[in-house]
Amino acid sequence: MEDKVVLLDFWPSLYGMRVRIALAEKGVQYEAKEENILLEKSPQLLEMNPVHKKIPVLIHNGKPVCESLNIVRYIDEVWNHNSPLLPSDPYQKAQAMFWADYIDKKIFILVKQVLKAKGEEQEATRKEFIECLKTVEGELGDKRYFGGERFGFIDLVLIPITTRFYSLEVCANLSIDSECPKLIGWAKRCIEKQSVAKSLPDPHKIYGYILLLKEKYWF
Amino acid sequence: MEDKVVLLDFWPSLYGMRVRIALAEKGVQYEAKEENILLEKSPQLLEMNPVHKKIPVLIHNGKPVCESLNIVRYIDEVWNHNSPLLPSDPYQKAQAMFWADYIDKKIFILVKQVLKAKGEEQEATRKEFIECLKTVEGELGDKRYFGGERFGFIDLVLIPITTRFYSLEVCANLSIDSECPKLIGWAKRCIEKQSVAKSLPDPHKIYGYILLLKEKYWF
Image (tube, rainbow over all chains, first blue to last red; front, top):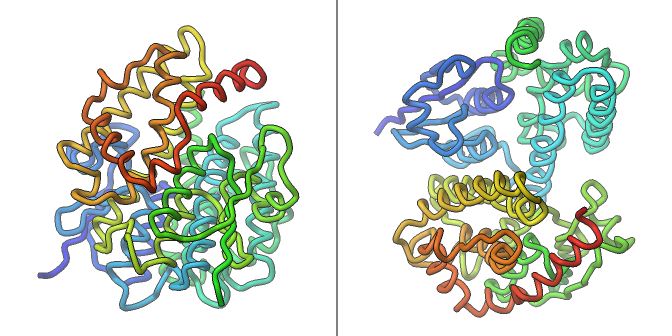
Protein backbone atom coordinates (compact mmCIF):
# COMPACT_ATOMS: atom_id res chain seq x y z
CA MET A 1 0.00 0.00 0.00
CA GLU A 2 1.28 3.44 -0.85
CA ASP A 3 1.44 5.80 2.11
CA LYS A 4 -1.06 8.61 2.18
CA VAL A 5 0.24 11.43 4.32
CA VAL A 6 -1.67 14.62 5.12
CA LEU A 7 -0.41 17.43 7.34
CA LEU A 8 -2.85 19.84 8.98
CA ASP A 9 -0.72 22.92 9.43
CA PHE A 10 -0.73 26.71 9.83
CA TRP A 11 2.13 28.60 8.19
CA PRO A 12 3.42 30.70 11.19
CA SER A 13 3.30 27.74 13.63
CA LEU A 14 6.61 26.94 15.34
CA TYR A 15 5.27 23.43 15.91
CA GLY A 16 4.14 22.95 12.31
CA MET A 17 7.62 23.95 11.07
CA ARG A 18 9.18 21.05 12.99
CA VAL A 19 6.97 18.55 11.20
CA ARG A 20 7.63 20.15 7.79
CA ILE A 21 11.38 19.84 8.35
CA ALA A 22 11.09 16.21 9.51
CA LEU A 23 9.05 15.24 6.43
CA ALA A 24 11.50 17.10 4.17
CA GLU A 25 14.50 15.40 5.81
CA LYS A 26 12.90 12.01 5.18
CA GLY A 27 11.76 12.88 1.65
CA VAL A 28 8.13 12.02 2.43
CA GLN A 29 5.57 13.27 -0.10
CA TYR A 30 2.50 14.71 1.58
CA GLU A 31 -0.55 16.88 1.14
CA ALA A 32 -0.33 20.08 3.19
CA LYS A 33 -3.70 21.39 4.35
CA GLU A 34 -3.55 24.93 5.61
CA GLU A 35 -5.80 25.66 8.59
CA ASN A 36 -6.61 29.19 9.59
CA ILE A 37 -6.81 28.57 13.31
CA LEU A 38 -7.35 32.28 14.03
CA LEU A 39 -10.69 32.23 12.22
CA GLU A 40 -12.28 28.79 12.38
CA LYS A 41 -11.01 25.29 12.95
CA SER A 42 -11.94 22.85 10.19
CA PRO A 43 -14.23 19.87 10.89
CA GLN A 44 -11.28 17.66 9.91
CA LEU A 45 -9.03 19.22 12.57
CA LEU A 46 -11.72 18.83 15.24
CA GLU A 47 -12.21 15.20 14.24
CA MET A 48 -8.52 14.34 14.04
CA ASN A 49 -7.42 16.09 17.25
CA PRO A 50 -10.54 16.17 19.45
CA VAL A 51 -8.53 16.48 22.68
CA HIS A 52 -6.39 19.54 21.97
CA LYS A 53 -7.99 20.78 18.70
CA LYS A 54 -4.57 22.06 17.64
CA ILE A 55 -2.31 21.82 14.62
CA PRO A 56 -0.03 20.23 13.59
CA VAL A 57 -1.73 16.89 12.99
CA LEU A 58 -0.10 14.25 10.81
CA ILE A 59 -2.65 11.93 9.22
CA HIS A 60 -0.92 8.76 8.07
CA ASN A 61 -3.16 6.42 6.09
CA GLY A 62 -6.19 7.92 7.82
CA LYS A 63 -4.81 7.71 11.38
CA PRO A 64 -3.92 10.94 13.24
CA VAL A 65 -0.78 11.64 15.24
CA CYS A 66 -0.81 14.83 17.35
CA GLU A 67 1.70 17.02 19.22
CA SER A 68 4.82 18.07 17.30
CA LEU A 69 7.50 16.21 19.26
CA ASN A 70 5.37 13.10 19.14
CA ILE A 71 4.86 13.49 15.38
CA VAL A 72 8.58 13.99 14.72
CA ARG A 73 9.45 10.88 16.75
CA TYR A 74 6.79 8.94 14.84
CA ILE A 75 8.13 10.11 11.47
CA ASP A 76 11.64 9.14 12.54
CA GLU A 77 10.49 5.62 13.45
CA VAL A 78 8.26 4.97 10.44
CA TRP A 79 10.59 6.37 7.74
CA ASN A 80 13.73 4.97 9.33
CA HIS A 81 15.59 4.12 6.11
CA ASN A 82 17.34 7.50 5.88
CA SER A 83 18.27 10.67 7.79
CA PRO A 84 17.91 9.38 11.37
CA LEU A 85 16.87 12.26 13.62
CA LEU A 86 17.12 10.73 17.10
CA PRO A 87 20.30 8.93 18.16
CA SER A 88 19.94 5.14 18.50
CA ASP A 89 21.91 4.98 21.77
CA PRO A 90 19.38 5.08 24.68
CA TYR A 91 21.40 7.56 26.75
CA GLN A 92 21.98 9.98 23.88
CA LYS A 93 18.31 9.62 22.92
CA ALA A 94 17.26 10.49 26.49
CA GLN A 95 19.52 13.57 26.37
CA ALA A 96 17.99 14.69 23.06
CA MET A 97 14.47 14.22 24.45
CA PHE A 98 15.44 16.15 27.59
CA TRP A 99 16.52 19.18 25.56
CA ALA A 100 13.50 18.97 23.26
CA ASP A 101 11.29 19.04 26.34
CA TYR A 102 13.22 22.03 27.72
CA ILE A 103 12.84 23.92 24.43
CA ASP A 104 9.11 23.19 24.43
CA LYS A 105 8.43 24.12 28.05
CA LYS A 106 10.74 27.11 28.25
CA ILE A 107 11.89 28.69 24.97
CA PHE A 108 8.69 28.27 22.91
CA ILE A 109 6.44 29.37 25.79
CA LEU A 110 8.61 32.35 26.69
CA VAL A 111 9.03 33.70 23.16
CA LYS A 112 5.28 34.19 22.93
CA GLN A 113 5.18 35.82 26.35
CA VAL A 114 7.98 38.24 25.44
CA LEU A 115 6.27 39.24 22.20
CA LYS A 116 2.91 39.60 23.94
CA ALA A 117 3.96 41.37 27.14
CA LYS A 118 4.38 45.08 27.76
CA GLY A 119 6.43 47.28 30.07
CA GLU A 120 7.79 45.72 33.26
CA GLU A 121 6.27 42.33 32.52
CA GLN A 122 8.10 42.28 29.18
CA GLU A 123 11.37 43.11 30.93
CA ALA A 124 11.01 40.12 33.29
CA THR A 125 10.06 37.55 30.62
CA ARG A 126 12.72 38.99 28.29
CA LYS A 127 15.38 38.31 30.94
CA GLU A 128 14.14 34.77 31.54
CA PHE A 129 13.97 34.08 27.79
CA ILE A 130 17.59 35.17 27.29
CA GLU A 131 18.73 33.04 30.24
CA CYS A 132 17.02 29.98 28.77
CA LEU A 133 18.45 30.66 25.32
CA LYS A 134 21.93 30.91 26.85
CA THR A 135 21.35 27.60 28.66
CA VAL A 136 20.58 25.98 25.30
CA GLU A 137 23.57 27.74 23.73
CA GLY A 138 25.73 26.27 26.51
CA GLU A 139 24.56 22.80 25.50
CA LEU A 140 25.50 23.55 21.88
CA GLY A 141 28.96 24.81 22.87
CA ASP A 142 31.39 24.69 19.96
CA LYS A 143 29.68 21.82 18.19
CA ARG A 144 28.48 22.15 14.60
CA TYR A 145 25.02 20.84 15.50
CA PHE A 146 23.54 19.87 18.88
CA GLY A 147 24.19 16.18 18.27
CA GLY A 148 27.67 16.72 16.80
CA GLU A 149 28.51 16.72 13.09
CA ARG A 150 25.04 15.90 11.75
CA PHE A 151 21.77 17.87 11.80
CA GLY A 152 19.40 16.03 14.15
CA PHE A 153 16.48 16.05 16.55
CA ILE A 154 17.39 19.00 18.83
CA ASP A 155 18.34 21.17 15.84
CA LEU A 156 15.00 20.44 14.19
CA VAL A 157 13.09 21.11 17.41
CA LEU A 158 14.77 24.47 18.09
CA ILE A 159 15.39 26.03 14.65
CA PRO A 160 11.81 27.38 14.14
CA ILE A 161 12.45 29.89 16.96
CA THR A 162 14.83 31.79 14.64
CA THR A 163 11.80 32.93 12.59
CA ARG A 164 10.90 35.07 15.65
CA PHE A 165 14.33 36.74 16.07
CA TYR A 166 13.49 39.71 13.82
CA SER A 167 10.19 40.31 15.67
CA LEU A 168 12.02 40.08 19.01
CA GLU A 169 14.43 42.76 17.84
CA VAL A 170 11.68 45.11 16.71
CA CYS A 171 9.04 44.42 19.40
CA ALA A 172 11.26 43.76 22.42
CA ASN A 173 14.56 45.45 21.55
CA LEU A 174 16.29 42.11 21.88
CA SER A 175 19.37 41.42 19.79
CA ILE A 176 19.97 37.66 19.73
CA ASP A 177 23.01 38.34 17.51
CA SER A 178 24.88 39.99 20.36
CA GLU A 179 23.38 37.89 23.21
CA CYS A 180 23.90 34.44 21.66
CA PRO A 181 26.48 34.60 18.84
CA LYS A 182 27.13 30.85 18.82
CA LEU A 183 23.44 30.16 18.39
CA ILE A 184 23.36 32.56 15.45
CA GLY A 185 26.27 30.69 13.83
CA TRP A 186 24.42 27.40 14.35
CA ALA A 187 21.21 28.87 12.86
CA LYS A 188 23.12 29.93 9.73
CA ARG A 189 24.45 26.39 9.31
CA CYS A 190 20.94 24.93 9.73
CA ILE A 191 19.33 27.28 7.25
CA GLU A 192 21.83 26.20 4.60
CA LYS A 193 20.00 22.89 4.54
CA GLN A 194 17.25 22.77 1.95
CA SER A 195 14.89 20.86 4.29
CA VAL A 196 15.11 23.73 6.77
CA ALA A 197 15.15 26.64 4.31
CA LYS A 198 11.98 25.54 2.55
CA SER A 199 10.13 24.83 5.83
CA LEU A 200 10.63 28.17 7.59
CA PRO A 201 8.67 31.28 6.59
CA ASP A 202 10.39 34.63 6.07
CA PRO A 203 10.96 36.36 9.47
CA HIS A 204 9.58 39.62 8.01
CA LYS A 205 6.34 37.84 7.11
CA ILE A 206 6.25 36.46 10.67
CA TYR A 207 6.63 40.04 11.94
CA GLY A 208 3.51 41.01 9.99
CA TYR A 209 1.69 38.10 11.62
CA ILE A 210 2.86 39.18 15.11
CA LEU A 211 1.60 42.71 14.41
CA LEU A 212 -1.79 41.25 13.42
CA LEU A 213 -1.90 39.24 16.68
CA LYS A 214 -0.99 42.31 18.70
CA GLU A 215 -3.68 44.37 17.00
CA LYS A 216 -6.54 41.88 16.99
CA TYR A 217 -5.91 39.20 19.62
CA TRP A 218 -3.31 40.25 22.19
CA PHE A 219 -4.51 43.25 24.09
CA MET B 1 30.28 -4.35 34.17
CA GLU B 2 27.52 -4.56 36.73
CA ASP B 3 24.98 -1.75 36.49
CA LYS B 4 25.05 0.82 39.26
CA VAL B 5 21.68 2.51 39.53
CA VAL B 6 20.86 5.36 41.93
CA LEU B 7 17.51 7.14 42.14
CA LEU B 8 17.26 10.63 43.62
CA ASP B 9 13.70 10.71 44.85
CA PHE B 10 11.26 12.31 47.33
CA TRP B 11 8.58 10.04 48.74
CA PRO B 12 5.39 12.11 47.95
CA SER B 13 6.51 12.90 44.36
CA LEU B 14 4.05 11.81 41.65
CA TYR B 15 6.97 11.84 39.23
CA GLY B 16 9.23 9.80 41.51
CA MET B 17 6.52 7.13 41.85
CA ARG B 18 6.55 6.55 38.10
CA VAL B 19 10.25 5.76 38.14
CA ARG B 20 9.90 3.48 41.19
CA ILE B 21 7.19 1.46 39.39
CA ALA B 22 9.26 1.22 36.20
CA LEU B 23 12.31 -0.04 38.09
CA ALA B 24 10.15 -2.52 40.02
CA GLU B 25 8.49 -3.77 36.81
CA LYS B 26 11.92 -4.40 35.30
CA GLY B 27 13.35 -5.91 38.47
CA VAL B 28 16.24 -3.44 38.56
CA GLN B 29 18.14 -3.26 41.86
CA TYR B 30 18.94 0.32 42.83
CA GLU B 31 19.96 2.61 45.63
CA ALA B 32 17.18 5.04 46.58
CA LYS B 33 18.44 8.37 47.90
CA GLU B 34 15.76 10.41 49.58
CA GLU B 35 15.98 14.15 48.98
CA ASN B 36 14.07 16.58 51.13
CA ILE B 37 13.38 19.14 48.45
CA LEU B 38 11.29 21.26 50.82
CA LEU B 39 14.31 21.98 52.98
CA GLU B 40 17.51 21.88 50.97
CA LYS B 41 18.54 20.31 47.68
CA SER B 42 21.60 18.08 47.97
CA PRO B 43 24.85 18.96 46.16
CA GLN B 44 24.39 15.68 44.25
CA LEU B 45 20.95 16.75 42.96
CA LEU B 46 22.27 20.16 41.88
CA GLU B 47 25.17 18.50 40.09
CA MET B 48 23.09 15.80 38.40
CA ASN B 49 20.18 18.02 37.29
CA PRO B 50 21.67 21.53 36.98
CA VAL B 51 18.99 22.71 34.53
CA HIS B 52 15.80 21.93 36.48
CA LYS B 53 17.28 21.03 39.92
CA LYS B 54 14.36 18.61 40.39
CA ILE B 55 13.85 15.00 41.37
CA PRO B 56 13.50 12.32 40.11
CA VAL B 57 16.96 11.79 38.67
CA LEU B 58 18.12 8.33 37.62
CA ILE B 59 21.88 7.96 37.78
CA HIS B 60 22.95 4.99 35.68
CA ASN B 61 26.63 4.14 35.96
CA GLY B 62 27.35 7.74 36.93
CA LYS B 63 25.31 9.35 34.13
CA PRO B 64 22.11 11.26 34.98
CA VAL B 65 18.75 11.00 33.21
CA CYS B 66 16.14 13.62 34.19
CA GLU B 67 12.38 14.16 33.78
CA SER B 68 10.12 11.26 34.71
CA LEU B 69 8.68 10.37 31.28
CA ASN B 70 12.17 10.51 29.83
CA ILE B 71 13.51 8.30 32.62
CA VAL B 72 10.74 5.70 32.19
CA ARG B 73 11.36 5.54 28.42
CA TYR B 74 15.09 5.16 29.09
CA ILE B 75 14.49 2.34 31.59
CA ASP B 76 12.20 0.62 29.08
CA GLU B 77 14.88 0.77 26.37
CA VAL B 78 17.86 -0.25 28.51
CA TRP B 79 16.20 -3.10 30.44
CA ASN B 80 14.28 -4.38 27.43
CA HIS B 81 14.52 -8.11 28.23
CA ASN B 82 11.25 -8.17 30.21
CA SER B 83 8.00 -6.29 30.98
CA PRO B 84 7.90 -3.97 27.95
CA LEU B 85 6.18 -0.73 28.94
CA LEU B 86 5.80 1.07 25.61
CA PRO B 87 4.26 -0.75 22.63
CA SER B 88 6.73 -1.58 19.83
CA ASP B 89 4.36 -0.50 17.04
CA PRO B 90 5.18 3.15 16.12
CA TYR B 91 1.53 4.24 15.95
CA GLN B 92 0.56 2.68 19.27
CA LYS B 93 3.73 4.11 20.80
CA ALA B 94 2.80 7.60 19.54
CA GLN B 95 -0.67 7.20 21.08
CA ALA B 96 0.82 6.15 24.44
CA MET B 97 3.19 9.13 24.37
CA PHE B 98 0.30 11.44 23.48
CA TRP B 99 -1.68 10.37 26.55
CA ALA B 100 1.38 10.51 28.81
CA ASP B 101 1.93 14.07 27.67
CA TYR B 102 -1.74 14.91 28.32
CA ILE B 103 -1.57 13.44 31.83
CA ASP B 104 1.58 15.48 32.51
CA LYS B 105 0.34 18.79 31.15
CA LYS B 106 -3.25 18.56 32.41
CA ILE B 107 -3.95 16.06 35.20
CA PHE B 108 -0.73 16.41 37.21
CA ILE B 109 -0.71 20.21 36.94
CA LEU B 110 -4.40 20.56 37.80
CA VAL B 111 -4.38 18.24 40.83
CA LYS B 112 -1.90 20.53 42.54
CA GLN B 113 -3.93 23.60 41.60
CA VAL B 114 -7.14 22.07 42.98
CA LEU B 115 -5.46 21.15 46.28
CA LYS B 116 -3.82 24.58 46.54
CA ALA B 117 -6.73 26.81 45.47
CA LYS B 118 -9.47 28.28 47.61
CA GLY B 119 -13.08 29.41 47.07
CA GLU B 120 -14.12 30.33 43.52
CA GLU B 121 -10.71 29.58 42.06
CA GLN B 122 -10.92 26.07 43.50
CA GLU B 123 -14.35 25.59 41.94
CA ALA B 124 -13.02 26.47 38.46
CA THR B 125 -9.89 24.26 38.62
CA ARG B 126 -11.96 21.48 40.21
CA LYS B 127 -14.30 21.48 37.21
CA GLU B 128 -11.44 21.46 34.71
CA PHE B 129 -9.69 18.66 36.62
CA ILE B 130 -12.80 16.46 36.53
CA GLU B 131 -13.27 17.12 32.80
CA CYS B 132 -9.69 16.07 32.09
CA LEU B 133 -10.02 12.98 34.28
CA LYS B 134 -13.18 12.02 32.35
CA THR B 135 -11.33 12.51 29.05
CA VAL B 136 -8.69 10.05 30.25
CA GLU B 137 -11.42 7.70 31.51
CA GLY B 138 -12.98 7.86 28.03
CA GLU B 139 -9.68 6.67 26.56
CA LEU B 140 -9.64 3.76 29.05
CA GLY B 141 -13.24 2.78 28.20
CA ASP B 142 -13.96 -0.81 29.15
CA LYS B 143 -10.42 -2.03 28.76
CA ARG B 144 -8.58 -3.74 31.61
CA TYR B 145 -5.57 -1.43 31.25
CA PHE B 146 -5.01 1.55 28.93
CA GLY B 147 -3.03 -0.55 26.46
CA GLY B 148 -5.40 -3.54 26.64
CA GLU B 149 -4.79 -6.69 28.67
CA ARG B 150 -1.35 -5.81 30.05
CA PHE B 151 -0.21 -3.10 32.48
CA GLY B 152 1.84 -0.61 30.47
CA PHE B 153 3.18 2.89 29.95
CA ILE B 154 -0.01 4.98 30.34
CA ASP B 155 -1.05 3.01 33.44
CA LEU B 156 2.33 3.62 35.02
CA VAL B 157 2.26 7.32 34.12
CA LEU B 158 -1.23 7.94 35.56
CA ILE B 159 -1.51 5.65 38.60
CA PRO B 160 0.42 7.94 41.03
CA ILE B 161 -2.50 10.42 40.88
CA THR B 162 -4.62 7.97 42.89
CA THR B 163 -2.47 8.75 45.96
CA ARG B 164 -4.13 12.22 45.87
CA PHE B 165 -7.75 10.99 45.70
CA TYR B 166 -8.25 10.93 49.48
CA SER B 167 -6.84 14.47 49.82
CA LEU B 168 -9.10 15.66 46.98
CA GLU B 169 -12.09 14.28 48.84
CA VAL B 170 -11.18 15.95 52.13
CA CYS B 171 -9.73 19.24 50.83
CA ALA B 172 -11.92 19.83 47.75
CA ASN B 173 -15.04 17.76 48.43
CA LEU B 174 -14.34 15.79 45.27
CA SER B 175 -15.48 12.18 45.07
CA ILE B 176 -13.60 10.48 42.24
CA ASP B 177 -15.47 7.26 43.12
CA SER B 178 -18.75 8.71 41.90
CA GLU B 179 -17.33 10.94 39.13
CA CYS B 180 -15.09 8.34 37.46
CA PRO B 181 -16.13 4.80 38.49
CA LYS B 182 -14.29 3.08 35.62
CA LEU B 183 -11.07 4.81 36.60
CA ILE B 184 -11.53 3.59 40.17
CA GLY B 185 -11.95 0.01 38.89
CA TRP B 186 -8.78 0.38 36.83
CA ALA B 187 -6.89 1.80 39.84
CA LYS B 188 -7.88 -1.24 41.92
CA ARG B 189 -6.54 -3.57 39.23
CA CYS B 190 -3.26 -1.63 39.06
CA ILE B 191 -2.72 -1.60 42.80
CA GLU B 192 -3.00 -5.39 42.89
CA LYS B 193 0.35 -5.46 41.14
CA GLN B 194 3.25 -5.67 43.57
CA SER B 195 5.35 -3.23 41.51
CA VAL B 196 2.64 -0.58 41.95
CA ALA B 197 1.63 -1.36 45.55
CA LYS B 198 5.17 -1.07 46.88
CA SER B 199 5.87 2.16 44.95
CA LEU B 200 2.90 4.27 46.06
CA PRO B 201 2.73 5.83 49.53
CA ASP B 202 -0.41 5.55 51.69
CA PRO B 203 -2.96 8.22 50.61
CA HIS B 204 -3.48 9.14 54.30
CA LYS B 205 0.24 9.86 54.64
CA ILE B 206 -0.02 11.99 51.47
CA TYR B 207 -2.88 13.89 53.11
CA GLY B 208 -0.59 14.74 56.03
CA TYR B 209 1.96 16.02 53.53
CA ILE B 210 -0.67 18.15 51.74
CA LEU B 211 -1.68 19.65 55.11
CA LEU B 212 1.96 20.51 55.78
CA LEU B 213 2.22 22.20 52.36
CA LYS B 214 -0.97 24.15 53.01
CA GLU B 215 0.26 25.29 56.41
CA LYS B 216 3.84 26.17 55.55
CA TYR B 217 4.17 26.74 51.80
CA TRP B 218 0.81 27.36 50.11
CA PHE B 219 -0.78 30.47 51.47
